Length: 147
Image 1 (cartoon, one colour):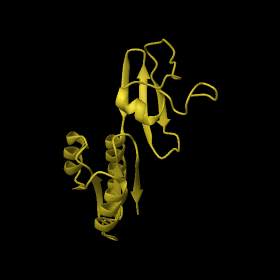
Image 2 (cartoon, helix red, strand yellow; image 1 turned 90 degrees about the vertical axis):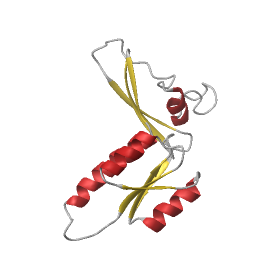
Image 3 (cartoon, rainbow, N blue to C red; image 1 turned 45 degrees about the vertical axis):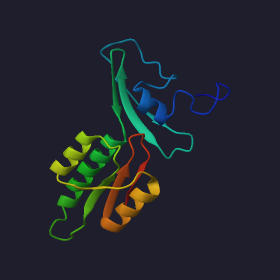
């Protein structure tokens, strides 16, 4: 939201978009059904991000689980170019709150998946200790990639 329009990220931050499954209140797409608009929503200190696409008749959210899967897909592809030269271990750390479909998809890539206690300090520790490249994202978009 703009300065003077209420508290920071009121009805527009990444957590709002992810939990409400709707675009931020500032978002006002053209009424043309043939046009799809893309956007990103961050939280107040910009350590969470979710992406979305929207048309007047459709809203699609790219939340933290999907972001982690896309990052892993990209990293697996990049690592495949070096398969003979290095043996880096790529993995994802999720919590019990992760979407089960994302866990299944990651395992089918295949990417190793570990489950950790909820909280950044727990998932960060597992990502750091168990993987050369560790990925973790909460559904609300809070996450990182460790190298």
